[in-house]
Image (cartoon, rainbow, N blue to C red; front, side, top):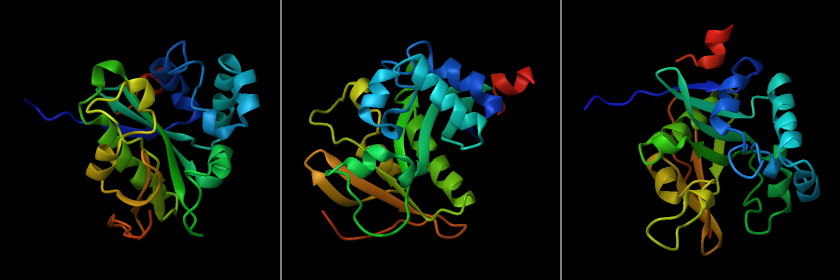
Length: 211
């Protein structure tokens, strides 16, 4: 079987149509549009749906690059939200996922893969691409907050921050754990070669073709 090849691009104004097609009318899940961690909870709930969609579009239109898209044969099949930790107010409010040191980190807050592409290595590839993206932006430490499954298989709706196994395959290691099911995992890319941060502690897509 031919090895699947994926291509990755940052979300920009020009690629908004691809992001919109991938997320569908429900904004991936419940009108989220990947804004849950970027807003106060009351604001998020008030603007669920179109309001959150407009907020995400505004980020992309302003060149904020809120994440990266994965493509196969020109079709958008996956998404990874990655930004500086300070861009996610929800993290600042979290006791379980509080900072473990003073290092400036980039945070992976969401992974979304098209239904027909799940369990096919897209999440791992997206995580690796996110580390590369951060390196190109001058960042050195990438942090993720997966959920440890209590059973062998976790329903997809609960796995939107990823699972530890995928992060490990992408080169991340656990550096802390605020609860039984919420590890904090890191990968460091201080130079051109990715390296793991060990610490102690608990194609062109549819939008491009339209231009």
